[in-house]
Image (cartoon, rainbow, N blue to C red; front, side):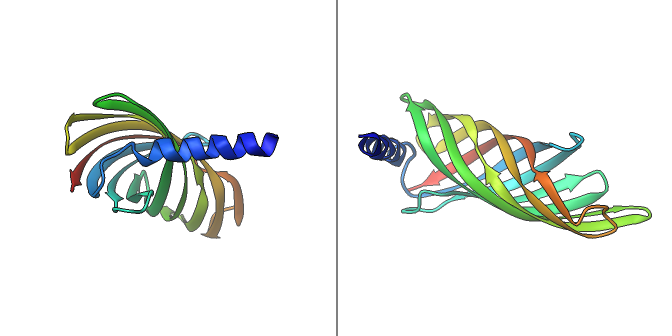
Amino acid sequence: MKKIILVLLFALILSVSAFAHPGGWGIGIVGQYNLAWDGFEGARGVALSLKTPGIPIFWGINADFRQDGFGVSLTGDRYLYFVRGRTTGLYMGIGAYAGVVSVSRDPIEWTSARVGGRIPIGLYIFPISFFEFFVSVVPSLGVGIYFGDHPDRFHFPEGGLGMDIGIRFWLR
């Protein structure tokens, strides 16, 4: 009985999310601010947001600007739940990230490779049918492998609390 309920719940979540955004291509730009779990060091960033037709993943190509460094990453999110009105809605999803960060603080230099999971939670607004405005909070948790002068070679927890604000244009 529990398995049947879980299968029905999963089918409901997938069917609701399948109709939540317009079809076609989505492309946009995102402003970001992230607070790391360890020490709450902040990093600003920008991202290119992409959504291709037929694939239920919202992609992000991100650039992070840190106090003494720079990072690039790729994110992929699958929105699992929507509360949708005529022009607004709430979403929650599950996703993953992978990236590289390089920091140079004289005399210390290190580079890290990071991977992990993320849970975007946000609000979207369609003021007109092809233009989307969205804001989200994105907690993430992962691991990092460090090279160079960093005291850790393997680091957990990696990630933090991200905040995104962006626009996306939909081409049908």
